[in-house]
Image (cartoon, rainbow, N blue to C red; front, side, top):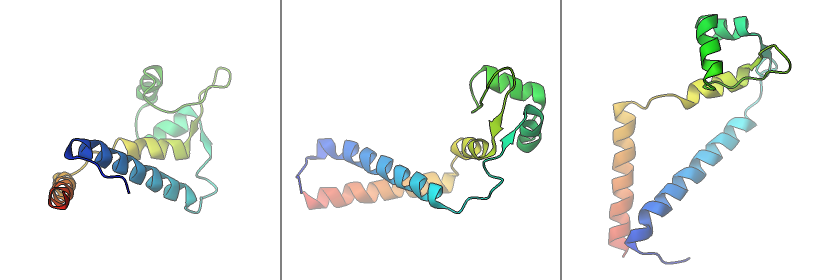
Length: 115
């Protein structure tokens, strides 16, 4: 195993978190799929699913804030992509942020003791 100095610790921790996120995404893809998960929704159906108005959804599309397909003149929304989009914009709770900070501090302290 390669030895590293304290100055590289933050970069190494960042890489570890990226790898964990990637593994989590891969595990999500392995979950059994509901046949209706990948269904395509019209703009009206997507607005109902997201509980927003059609004009609000058009605004999100025009700002490129939401995943959408546009073969020709119609807009289609993949239900799975919409769920991922909603989940990706989730805000962490104070408790989750504190827990992450404590875990990072523990890692830093372990590294200090290791050196």
